[in-house]
Length: 112
Length: 112
Image 1 (cartoon, chains in turn purple, orange):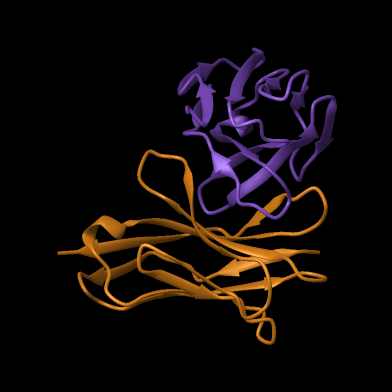
Image 2 (cartoon, helix red, strand yellow):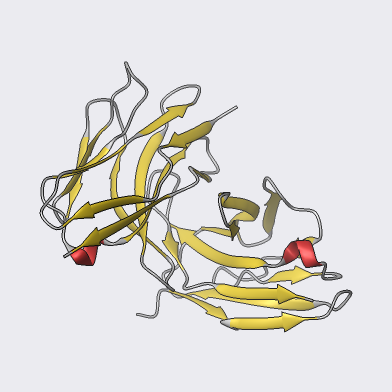
């Protein structure tokens, strides 16, 4: 049972480049979310999904895009990377609204 | 809106000392409350949770009680160990989407 798997673990991008952060879970969870973690800011919600084909924006969605074509996968796309997107990104999944989330190990992204 | 406020760190304790990390929340209705722990270089792990008033969550010697009258969910441990050194996040979940709202985190360092 792998849980939540994020790839890559580390990435360096140049300003203006695009890329996709991958997230996959094997627990058949309905809920999936993307957070970014910045020093002194805690974790902030970027986008989330309550099931395949359903996504919505969180607190800081600008510059990011998501889709949910399957229950297992929830990729996060950076459309045109900016230095302000330098952060650690976490994907998380959960069964229902009342349960705690399972987090991936994170992707550390640096935009230069 | 909904929010979580937790005590700022860092907190430095000697081994076997008593730990309290304060957490208060603002929310409409009755959210679920969580404590997550993040060890260096890792993702977040659910430490404990409480889903209704007066519930006590506990795990690995840590405890927290859901206090509706004071809107608080303070984390306590009677005797900390060096291995408890980590960042601790208080979080709430409210609404049908079940998204987590995090505090900014408290870094705990335990010295031998």
